[in-house]
Image 1 (cartoon, rainbow, N blue to C red):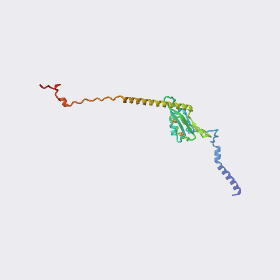
Image 2: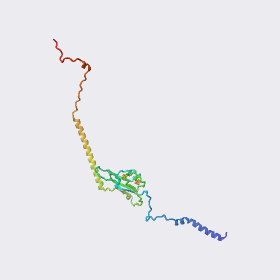
Image 3: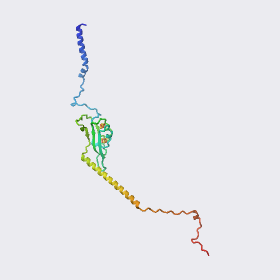
Image 4: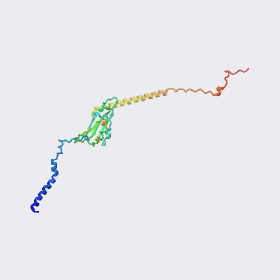
Amino acid sequence: MTALTIYFNDIYRAISSALIGMRITIRQMVSPTVTLQYPHEKKQMPDRVRNRLYMNYDDCIGCELCAKACPVDCIEIEVMKAPPTETLGETSTGQKKRIYVTKFDIDIAKCCYCGLCVFPCPTECLKMTDVYEFSEYDRNNLIYNFGTMSAVEVETAKLKVKQYDEEQTAKKAAAAAQAAAAKAAAAAQPAPVPEIPAAPVTPAQSEQPKGPDTPPTQQ
Ligand code: SF4
Ligand code: SF4
């Protein structure tokens, strides 16, 4: 092999080796672009994606099933049974609300997006949305307060419940006192005298011949 042949052979090998190395790069250059210019462009999320939780407070009946289902205890609920005289309205699914939900907080910083709280909710007021941009500088801002009762409304509700409980306690005490008085009056009445049953007539007595009322006098 002459020196010239070796020279051109080396050039060929250098170029072909560079082209082989560049093959993936060249293929990517002509294939469609997949890079998104985030945050100016955003990827379409799948339909059933589980991201930030949303809660519709107006539909909550305070059953606490969601809090019990949560594996990391990030749902905090405070409830209070309303007096039967109070009308709290209905949910959009037609269920009557009977419980004040005075507090409904979700600490989304602890949430693991499992969705276990969503399924047991009887009124379907908990939903997992496709929102994924909710970072904060302060962790406390990740505690979402979904409850809409103001402090004044909570206090008013507490007063109503207290008042109702006191009324019920007074009613029960009055009924108990009435029952005790009736019992005492019944105990103070003289006991009825029991009737003495007549002595049974023996067969011998019944067979004796009936004599005169007065015994006969001696002459
Ligand atoms: S998605 Fe899971 S971790 Fe998050 S609040 Fe619901 S149950 Fe708790
Ligand atoms: S399960 Fe639904 S209705 Fe029950 S407390 Fe939770 S959010 Fe409210």
